Length: 72
Image (cartoon, rainbow, N blue to C red; front, side, top):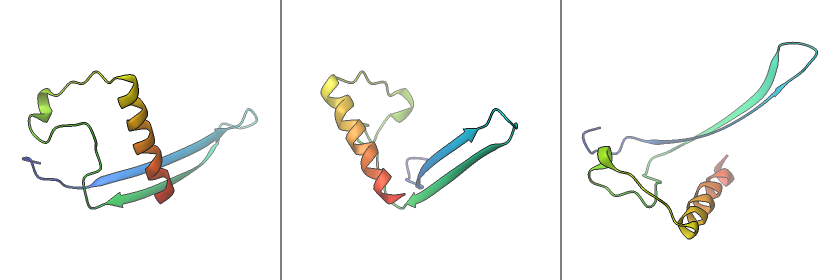
């Protein structure tokens, strides 16, 4: 808010829907970080930010995101 970091939440949700009943069984794991965790995004002018990632940048982002799965 107003350029100040608030928090980062990492949430992993899984669910299973059965054909026998309408119930959905699932699990949600959540971790809260107290530091920024984004990459390839500038600190300023985030409202007008657009990005076209290269293949290498997409792979870098994928690895970065998957690294957080170890926290969950």
